[in-house]
Length: 243
Ligand code: ASP
Ligand code: MG
Image 1 (cartoon, rainbow, N blue to C red):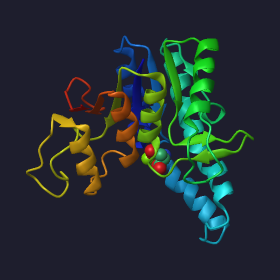
Image 2 (cartoon, rainbow, N blue to C red):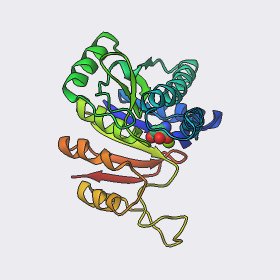
Image 3 (spheres, rainbow, N blue to C red):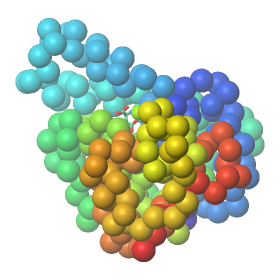
Image 4 (cartoon, rainbow, N blue to C red):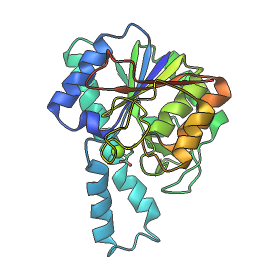
């Protein structure tokens, strides 16, 4: 199994979703595809909850998670339906029924043992070559939806890879890979084609926002290689992060 993660920028419009179809269509491996909400949907949903509670989210965490999680449920339904339309049979997974967390709304903690058991039994009873599921969101055993922290889809991809002993994870991004500096601020920024987990952790600890900082540990534990690649140029090498 290989894990692909597509962020908000890659699913922001119809052309983005067609591009995902092309990338998946060119992949022979069994795939777990993790998708974020479209474009800035999460910000918009967050704004809705903030407006409702007069811009003071404290005490509204549970409501926040129920509302904001709909962004990913919606985007993955669209991606899954589009893939079916293109003849790429796939199984849509409601991750809130499989990935179990505590009730720490907006920063929920995943129960890895229970999630692994549920995930394995789900995949066994729903065999498929391509699975499509949500990043960032999860659920409690009593059926409440939770979220793992903003920009948490990379982290979901890493957790699923860890639990499935995946061959690799690819984060499809709107940049060529991990760069030596922010290309918007430094014209000398160059692509870093190879990094170790430790080097990547160091870069992220200095504030680079290309990968969610919690992504590395679950991959490092199982020595699963992480690729960061440009979704508009899937043939390019991007960055390879490994032991
Ligand atoms: N859609 C969520 C967010 O914008 C998760 C993610 O994009 O990784 O925070
Ligand atoms: Mg996002």
